[in-house]
Amino acid sequence: EAACQGLIAGMNAHLKVQDKSPFVLRRDEAYIGVLIDDLITKGTEEPYRMFTSRAEFRILLRQDNADLRLTPLSHAVGLASEERLRQTERKASQTSELLNKLRTESVEPEAANPAIVPRGTEPIKQKVKLYNLLLRPQLSYADIEPLSPTLTTLSNSFGELRSEVVEQAEIKAKYEGYIEKERNLADRLQHLEDIPLAKDMPYEKLVSLSMEARQKLEKIKPATLGQASRISGISPSDISVLMVYLGR
Image 1 (tube, rainbow, N blue to C red):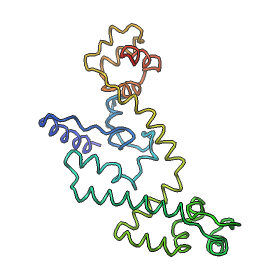
Image 2: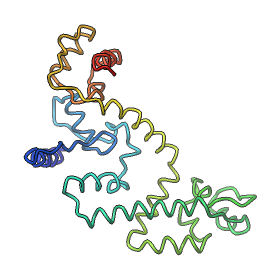
Image 3: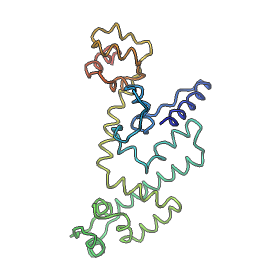
Image 4: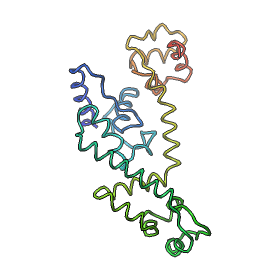
């Protein structure tokens, strides 16, 4: 917890000296973003501990996609190397290629059933996409791959990234609905994060705000409307007042 704050502080000190914008991780981008946002908006009486339960976008903040989430951001501020960025982009591209293959290739019942029924899943009665088979909880990618020689050839062509690409594709397929739902929620909330609040906002003069809201906003001075909405004691009506004041 302390180390990640030091990392972000060091990065932003460097960026400030160069007159560049600060590096800020959102709550849907990294657990570091959750930690720092919690410390700013909620405060703490004792040492803060980062539990996954503190994050509302846990399905997006997975261990398997940490490189895909953070490497482009790190490269943009000069930390991640060009080689590392290229490898991450290659992994993303290969994952998309594998998912596309699974979505477009079908398998006949006589080829699939001998392999899938022993796994405890229902036999298929007509030709189905490999992707639909992978969605079954009893089946893994390892069960699906032998059904298609071209799928095996494709995954073997990924070289050293094969295991990571297969893992990423399988997770994306099996949890697609949950991932998409959480991504949509994060995108809807992002519009509040895009509305900045000036450090000299005259909260004390906004009499339509509750007294508690005025006091907490004056003390914490949130950087965005989204950050303000997460402060304990700030109600949706208080956020509406701020939006009216800002002309949104």
